[in-house]
Length: 441
Image (cartoon, rainbow, N blue to C red; front, side, top):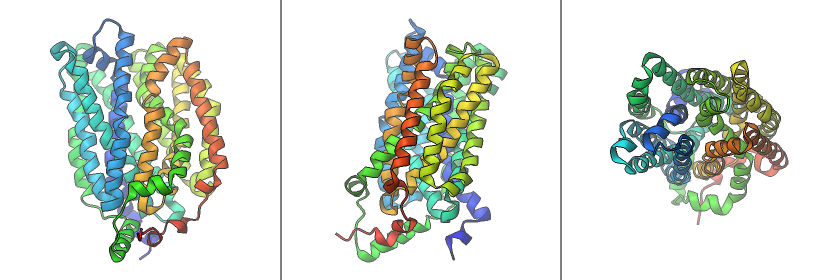
């Protein structure tokens, strides 16, 4: 039976939902961490200077990204050697438990310096699991999909995971409305992180009910027949280092943009735009809705245009709209919602080609390892540092323009490098056939 016939209806929905479960949890954590960053700053760091405490909070966020490439290598190796489904089942436990444990940590007032240390440990665990999640999940859906609908199916996965951010913002909004300010600051924020525990149970269950991708099964059978052992990390670094470097450069703008929306926008709107917390939550929710819409719109567009042109086009969109979007968002009132919506749409349209590239530019034998390594290096270099650079740039310039120019410059780099990198992006799909990838050394 062809892949075209297999990946339809209920089976398609089941595979996409199972693949997106851990990514939902990862992005939910990002969304929650961003909207309660000022509370975390007050709870886990000395309170002499709120600005310094906030910088420390985002420094922990950035340091957590150190674990992402490590997690990408570990779970990428598992995914390329033992299967995508096994990597997904293990990585979700790291992701969700790291999130849930943040909900029970003692504060700086209770245990002093050990509070931020434990916070960092939880961020490292969460980030390590997240480091293997996206590449494994996208490869899983990509390999189940017919060639003509790969971008659309991956867009469904990506949009579903972005719903995690939206749910984080919505739940924070509900908790802040239902609870008094003292209750929310005392224990309400903890509830947001404890949601990670049921997410872990639900995700493991879903992933136990789906089958391995056809491409990996063919590759595993070919390896067994040839009696070879997979060496995905060595092969990725030795044979595919050029597309890894191209990917890192091309997705730097997406890495920065993803954290601008996910973990910094709410803080930006309150500190620069002077919105109160409820207004900032509402604007963030609107922004995340546009992220989801932009991602879904780009699915059929990328299938039609091809990955390289879609990535170049959306990089140019970000380059044009970055500064005016953040300038509008900094103005408060209606401008905050308009600017937030625009920057959300930028993230949505860029997300699909950037994330589709994780799987499409690498062959099956090293797909998860190379994709996870490239993606997480880009996220560590440009995403993890995004909020702290944003705080610093806005403090230095006295407005939103420093961060906006930085984002616009990276968007232009994406557009240009994607446009000229034909060899990396415009390859024949048949070159990824599993039978051609078995290492016969």
